[in-house]
Length: 411
Image 1 (cartoon, rainbow, N blue to C red):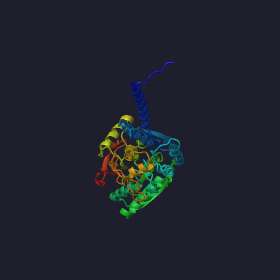
Image 2: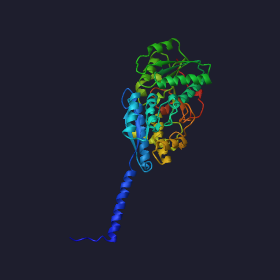
Image 3: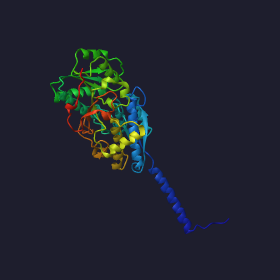
Image 4: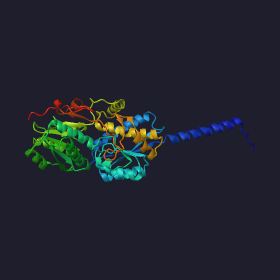
């Protein structure tokens, strides 16, 4: 039996091979994806349209991040769970994403009641929770260190609505609020802001069941005693039904009564499929308008979204994309997916996103971990089936409402 001599050149070759194998294994480990959990409504009774918009936006942001090399050399992977818009499903989804899928953060949720449910689980496990579209101030009032909100919030909308009602010269205002954390919270918040800025305005709100189809009792009472303005604080499909019934009964919009959309319905893809004449002359609180100025990232995201979906950009696009970008930026700054490190990075962040420079407040109450200066606009729809780009922009971000640009129905 012969023995082969291992020469120095052989040793060098073996060492090189071993080093290559080690480097390959190390690269494979380093390239393991960073998992981000996404909870959204993908089936009824939740708002599937909103869920679809949020997921499309997150996927656009994911591609931009991964095409640029990912985060810490690792790609972002989205792990999606359907909540059906139900709080109990949101809790179960967050539990699964954290315990089974081992995500490092949660985002995507777009209904306040679901945010309130899901963030309890994230708080329990101490996992960062980036709220996309939960407007309820009760979310931040919890004071959970894990929860952050780069989207809109009820007080911000209430301040805008109260200012609009005052500038319109309204003496009596009625809100139609859905019976959810969002709807009731929004109505109470508007009441508080009117007391501060326009105490002379008489305000009340009606709570409507989001599962109902007939709102005749409330609408007929408004017809008998029409207010100067009706503020809508509901989500589809109930919102569409209520709006159409207001118009059918001749309640609003009219020469007597302004109709104000406080829920941003006008940029929903199915808006004009479900409403017609009622939307003409309606004033809309908005978070996006094609005519508003946007940073470079906002333009990039809008173009990528249109290329992907063949739809026009919408209010959920920017805040959803920013939610994922912010988590990626936090991981970069922390150089880690450790929860404490990510939270610390988010509290210190000052980053230009799709809508402006995002920072998070650490003041207690509804401002906690909220982007306080989120930009908003106001526009008026002046024709049936009018694209958002053609609507009349009556308030630019950071500017006062220009009442002179508003038109009221002749009748």
